[in-house]
Amino acid sequence: MAAPARLDFARSERSTVGLEWEVALVDRDSGDLRQAAEAVFETIGRRAEPRPWNVTGELLLNTVEVSSGKCRTVGEAAEHLRGGMDEVAAAAEPLRIELMGGGTHPFASWAHQKITDKQRYATLIDRTQWWGRQMLIYGVHVHVGIEDRAKVLPLARAMLTVFAHLQSLSASSPFWGGRDTGYASNRALLFQQLPTAGLPFQFEEWGQLEQYVGDLLHTGVIDQFDEVRWDIRPAPRFGTLEMRVADGASNLLEVTAISALTHCFVEHFSSMLDRGEAVPTLPPWYVQENKWRSARYGMDAIIITNAAGDEELVTDSVGRWLHELAPVAERLGCSEELEQVRVVLRRGASYQRQRAVARRHAGELDAVVRALVAEMRAGRPL
Image (cartoon, rainbow, N blue to C red):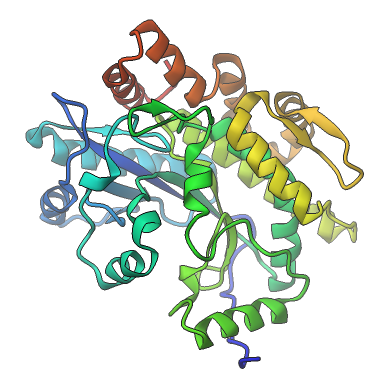
């Protein structure tokens, strides 16, 4: 057994929040992806004024990530994202590029995408080969500040009990390579093919996590902790728990709705720990099954809700949670954003809206791209 790696967890204020939103650059005329991130960054980089948001590249040159600063509320973080997206859109406009959100692009070919010129990405592709090249996917990540390291792993285990709720609501990747996959979130199952990606281990003690990381470092699986790409993971250098469950969103309303729900779940479970109560957990085999069901069936998933194996339609469970979390949302200042989850329940998740557009246009997926671009511009589901 290797020596454990020391993972110092940064001091953080409780329930602060930060958001990261990955979006695609698409050609205004063809709807296909454009490998133009560097040109966009070059324009943005010439602007000297400080901003509270950050705009960065990702694995592929067709991708831009906008992230908020550390915020008190989801609404404040959303304003950061709005400013960042406006800045990216302005830089992309002269290039005839539109911004598109979603877990995948409906018809683009993964084989035609170019990798960002960074050593860490070159190493990833060299190691993962065919699966790594297929990571033509986009997500939304939510960081929530945790004030006590002792809470981090119990909160991560508790969040696995509501994993399917977040994945079903955000599911936006039904199409892949020009075909309907039959899944609501094809991204969820694609991403877990990478080593160290997918569902986390349900460690009980921080020392177990440090031993795990020490073993991976010793055997060359990773070079640094952030190469552990779990769907829910501690982020020690920020002092946060990072939820990487959600598919990329096509509009800001859905980003804020999913983020508010995530924020409220973490605070709810944190308050349970404060009261000395045991937070809920699920056996790993139930968590794994829930992930598959929500990826496959989305809003129609029948999920396992407790260790006894009781089941419920995910949308019914979400409705009950919205009622229970209302006082938490009021405390966190995100009541309006949490209520927007009901917009998704009424109008359908993105994967449902995308399929509806495809049906109306005889299966033409360029129409789906146009609809996703329109939602990005409108800032809400259409």
